[in-house]
Image (cartoon, rainbow, N blue to C red; front, side, top):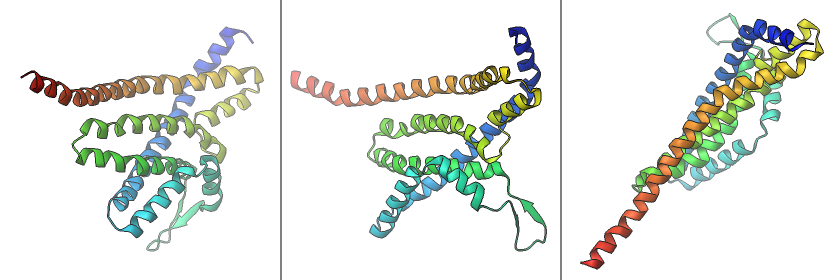
Length: 228
């Protein structure tokens, strides 16, 4: 297949793939928001002061952090129902696969938040605001990992970008498109994640410089006092 023909196929199917990538962003965003919320609850439990509650929080935090994402995604796809009814309604509602994928991906975010936010709160209370704010770029980096991991949602039937690449290859019945199509899908992730990665690195670098300057300030003050 000639390069011009490959480019024509990619151009033709771009809107279809863009829509699929939108599902990747939606799944990762829901996983991050839900996981951070639950992780925040575990942090509140850890800071409660009760030994029993603190111990329960530690066990749950460690458990969420260690659960394999793919295994959890398959469990969610198999064990969660495909439809459900609300107690006050006779109408049947679908349980979308993309929500199951988001629930599975949220586990890592729960563990990350629960294990890191507690330390950030302690730093903030101690007046070390720069160290506390390091949670933000680290959380952002974890979000980018979740966005990339969202491609595994295709394994449970979500029509995200990787799944749509497979559909395009099957629809055209042209295996020569396989490598270009997957590389094109990777380009979507790269163009979306790379600028955010740079932003997180710059923000983290600025915070580290702030922390170092705060540590150096007392030393300078002591030097001035000694000179006097």
